[in-house]
Length: 353
Ligand code: XMP
Image (cartoon, rainbow, N blue to C red; front, side):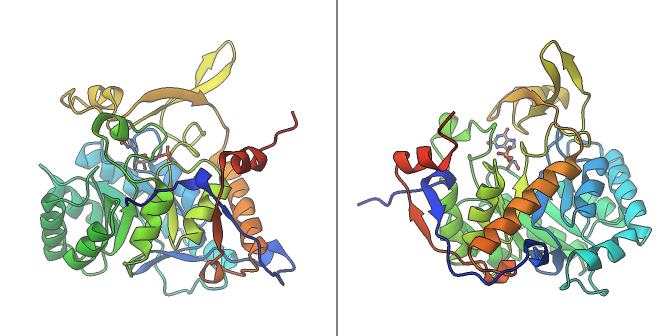
């Protein structure tokens, strides 16, 4: 018999005994890769309508990290990185992070992350990004359980300095996690076909619903796992972390903010910004790529204002989640969960109005 596979809406976390007095004291300190830590488990997705320097700076201010996307020339991706690094250098962040979490130590380095692919210029790009100040390279490909990723990790490990961590993905199976760990990855980006604009599952039939995907992978890996795709609420974030993930990667939740790349679009019914899949026709056209293998949609979404307020809301929700399980920090956050029926899902949402 084949197993069932579940996603965020299929489960609810079960409350347990708590002695947490104030949610404010709950720490969201976590690990994003083997050698780098965050004060909040949020990573901005390396999409061209989500993360360039403005977003990365705001993510860092909130204790998370932004991954600068790779749909730029090497020079321009490096410029975005340099803008982030210049801000970090001001030493404001080290001080701020020590107030955000008691676990933060002076000797930790603030992570600076940027994406590369596995073709063409990726080695040159990675070296330039590291020279610009990046300490985490994310290998950003749709099918991370691939020989090209194995070769890319080996190559990057041989040319980059030791302080640089490599996060690789995307993957969706236990075997992929074991392989990427053996190939030398320092962190895993997990989730295939579950993103808000993804059409991979429709086009190819491939992909694993997020809960099962994260559970399978967290059962076999010692690496920090970044849950990527399909996260719509702080409740989804709590579920991803409850399943053993260390961080979540956010796309749609933080797209459409002041700091996401792109212009505000004025319409009769309000303000909007564009949000487009990395493999959408629009993104491929915008970057002069071949218009084939389209596996994503593009759309406009309502303008949300400053990302700071979105992140604050997510942190508040997540701290509440920890208090429902009696956890003072993410290490202690190991709630049980139940599979719910459709009636349970209906009950879980406001249903009076
Ligand atoms: P959310 O749900 O946060 O998802 O908006 C963001 C994640 O979706 C992935 N992504 C894509 N997946 N086709 C895909 O199959 C695409 O065009 C595409 N664009 C982004 C990516 O993992 C991102 O972090």
